[in-house]
Image 1 (tube, rainbow, N blue to C red):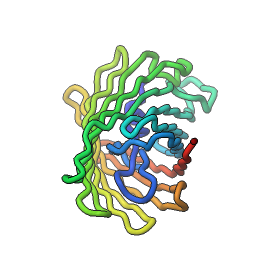
Image 2 (tube, rainbow, N blue to C red):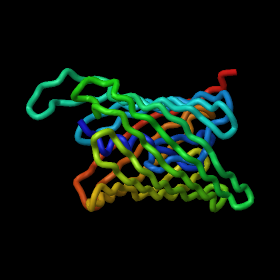
Image 3 (tube, helix red, strand yellow):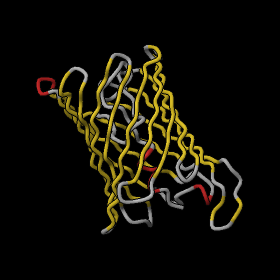
Image 4 (cartoon, helix red, strand yellow):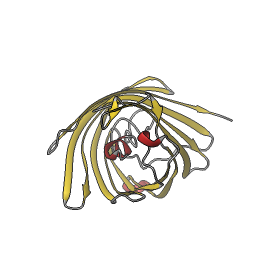
Amino acid sequence: MKFNFPLIFFFIPVISWGQIITDRPDQTESSATLPRNILQVESGYSHQDEEVFNTLFRYGISSSIELRLNTNLLFLDGYNGLSLDSPEFGDLELGAKIQILNLEEKHTTIAFLTHLSIPTASKYYSNNGYGTLNRLLVAHDLSKNFSIGYNVGYNKIYREKGVFIYTLSIAKSINKLGFYVEVFGEQEDNRIQSNFDSGITYLIKNNLQFDLSFGEGLNNSLSYFSIGLSWNNNLF
């Protein structure tokens, strides 16, 4: 079973505002990595065609490398007329983010993100094959509280056609509030899907952040709503 949009949707970041730089709620992955020994947990609920509860675990092992574990709890009503036990976890995604360039004088950072999708789920909740999810992440801080970020990437699930992805996000922060607007999409064969989303974040306290977002398809019927919380802590 192929979940094209969730594979893209659950790599979702805020670019550079507030005291927590997260990988939700937008689609553009941040080019920032977590500091060493910082554990960050980012969880959210989304409603598209189906409901999904996502949790991303991130852990910084150096100043430029973080390890990642992504999980999706899927609520499926059925599949091709079959009634399914629900909810169940989808395939696990193990990965790393590596910052490869930090040009402080030009306020630009570049990173590479890769995940291995492992077919750990049951038949109707799985892609039923290994896959790789890869992105190049770029961000520019245009001012202290205004930034732009963009990603290009390629996802490939075993026995499925590869998918090129793109994102472009503009973000603005005002004290504890953050706002963003974004376009994102994918190309498979000659089919190009383009979408728009927008959202807010609110820094509840130094290590806890709330987010709210929605998205709509520009040339398709995509429509989703998402709400989430992100938390971090120094383990040592």
